[in-house]
Image 1 (cartoon, rainbow, N blue to C red):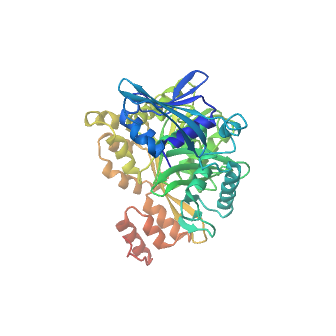
Image 2 (cartoon, one colour):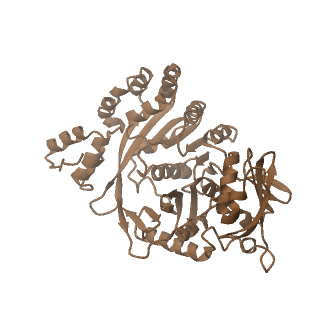
Image 3 (cartoon, helix red, strand yellow):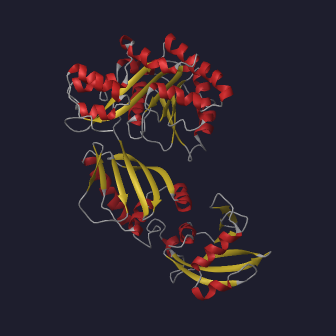
Length: 487
């Protein structure tokens, strides 16, 4: 499909007057006499030439050159357009205008909710099909729905992928299913860049964190279930030591783990606890908003990156003027966000944030290593004073089905603060190991505990361990036989 057809679709959907391409400028959409860019980067003259030649009739392509004037019609999946190419200082300027159909307005303008870029497909039908797949995902207890061209629906259940019986998806059908639920901002981003992250709510079923992308076969989508009912700390077996972090007045608490390890769910349970027990203002900055908390004793404000604020760092800077007591940062993605988070925690706010690290020690190292070498000593001091706890978790399959979290817990004590300040983070596991009476736990201890309680198989715990040599020794001491052929 021609690249310009995506933008012609936007032209029709918005009932705009014209789409303009000119070298040295972003692609522009004109409506009501006002032109707004629909691409972030300016087009090069060669790009304009290539894009126009792609939709031109074969007999006219050789005539489309810098300095030439050409007009033609193009029939796109979303409707017809008149294309006018004019010489502009040795370059080209192309203007595309929607052609009215027999009924008057363009088909896309007449029914903007009924069609998407899927070659004129019925968006209502495609949305109903997607909704049914999402209901199936929730009914089956799955965590993710994968949609791919040439494949049937694929569900992730208890961490494993399971192909459903049914027809495979075609590219136009799958594009329509993905785009029919996208917010306009994300639709534009997807059509321009081939990537989009957004949220979708199916009333009475669940919310879903959605990712749309392009691969070699066409569009693809992944939908992660966000349960409508927010779990409690008791349901997730969150320890009392971790729950006590919710009653602090300031400091930084980091929840870490690989993608899909349940960080968002654990954070939601902690926010739910604070919402019920405290009387404060909770401000969340996420991309996208996942669990939606209704204000109870607390006032809860949700802000989404890209929709309500430009980025995590701009939203976090603005948060200081919005009178929060508790700030939740969906992800500390860059150095500046980390720096502002630490400063916010130091200035009398309780900050919860996530990182994609696997242990408490690697979390501290990751935070410090993001800064230039000449600033790391200062950051170690700041972090030693502001960090209150790190919860690093992985998900393990239960023997009886479903999954359970194993958590490494590090709470900041004077000994922990000193090691962070002095750059001796390699000694932190020893402190965690010898501080069980304070509520700390290594990941290996948590995994062994799940095995001893009969919740998880020894092999599953071994596969999820970071320190496999250590957990192998622990299992041998307790008489457990683990298949150690896995690498």
